[in-house]
Structure formats: structure tokens, C-alpha cells
Image (cartoon, rainbow, N blue to C red):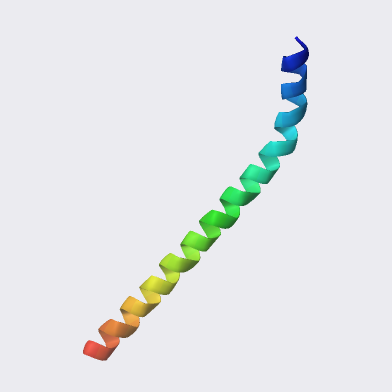
Length: 48
């Protein structure tokens, strides 16, 4: 039982950190996608 009690204490501390990392990772991916879209639009404008 001691191990399970320790686990419940550890999980709440680690979860917010993981969620924060995931959020920053997603925002970075979205930024890269937006940059790629902008480059594509600029390239299309140049070719036309």
C-alpha cells in the first residue's frame, strides 16, 4: 500500500509539467505549419 500512496503523490506533480511540455510542443508545431503555409503562399505569388 505504501507504494500506491507514493504514486498518488507523485502523479499530480508530474502531470502539469507533461501537459505544459505537450502544449509548448503543439504551439511550436502550429508555428512551423503556419510558416510553411506562408512560404507556400509567397512561392505561389512569385510563380504567378
